[in-house]
Length: 154
Image (cartoon, rainbow, N blue to C red; front, side, top):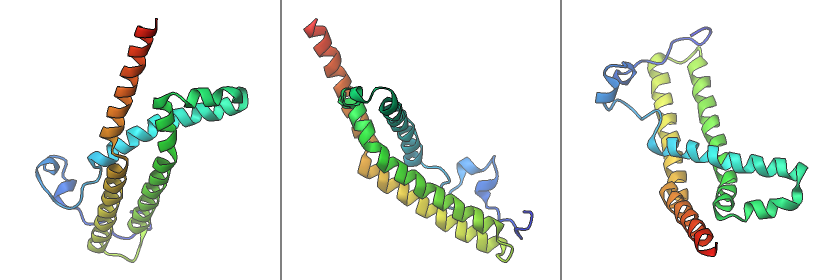
């Protein structure tokens, strides 16, 4: 590491062939984190559309966001943006540790593992609070009701 002293000590998990078979330290990307990033992308699409509509046709925003799926996604956007900022702060802290010229490789590995555990806990807590499976089920039910009402109403 240029000007960063020693690199963090590598564990067995850093070996690409062995990593799937060992439990050596915290996971670097969890199921919860993956789902939350997927949801963040969906909520961002809705929020970005609302921002564009604010400039072009503000009178149609209420109609757009009143669709149950969009209303739910728009409502989740700020929570997921806050979570994303928390993840970036942890990543920045990891980068600072990796660049620290004074820390030993073992100390860096220990500190980074602790931050990875914290990141995983934050993702798990947000995931449980938002409960993406419930959100997805709710969205599917809403879409099914809308489809049925259109078919019956026609």
